[in-house]
Image (cartoon, rainbow, N blue to C red; front, side, top):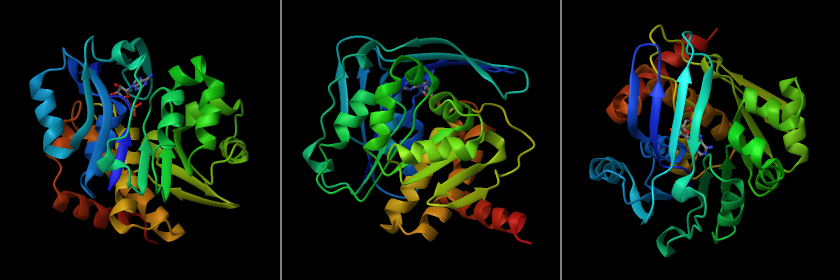
Length: 297
Ligand code: AMP
């Protein structure tokens, strides 16, 4: 089993073509639903009493929700606006609400998870939660500018507590205070991460392990409408694939990165979660085959 911990949110997303208000979002939501294409996935997250029943039902279709707490107060809210090229996003508001003082616990049924993903979330909560698992074979984390700016030391501590970091290029630079991505990766490895995966949006990703660099192309698309959650979908697919194979071999991790690129590509083709919610196993295998053709030479 895979456990995913992180934010479950009500997002307001402003794209040049559409504004979505209070839609279901959050890093753990995207990552968990993406992972559920590969393996049974348990969610640990918190929402407020204002969380709509229809969003709960969407989560319940894909995820084990024994780890979802519903508490008094308002759900975490994120508001972000893309520029007209969809390549940069400005954060207009981050309202932590019930996430602020959340003390997560791991349900008994999840404790044996061998694969754990700490999605974008308060790094102190993430680092303390990972200690509660009995039998972790592979753990991974992500972070975002908000936490790097407010709790950088805790982000570094969180990195020490996992096997792999998956992070986007701009955030890797901000966190490490380096400009070159190889230097960024080396610094995160010096903090304790064995694997570093730097996501480069539509340009794919770079994976670092020891002195090996594994670059992988993004799946090229002509029509992108909303990049929200692409990085989380990437990470969820990666760890979901590994959990489904119960493998942490280097060759499985390379394949997992490819699945990450492919699931990220489904996420950006539709608004909000729709791309991920509509994808079928058949679509994934077709796109993987297509991807293989694209990169073979
Ligand atoms: P991404 O597009 O991969 O950066 O992920 C966007 C998702 O991350 C959105 O659905 C947000 O709800 C969530 N998110 C944004 N800011 C934060 C934050 N500071 N902590 C946790 N989750 C966040």
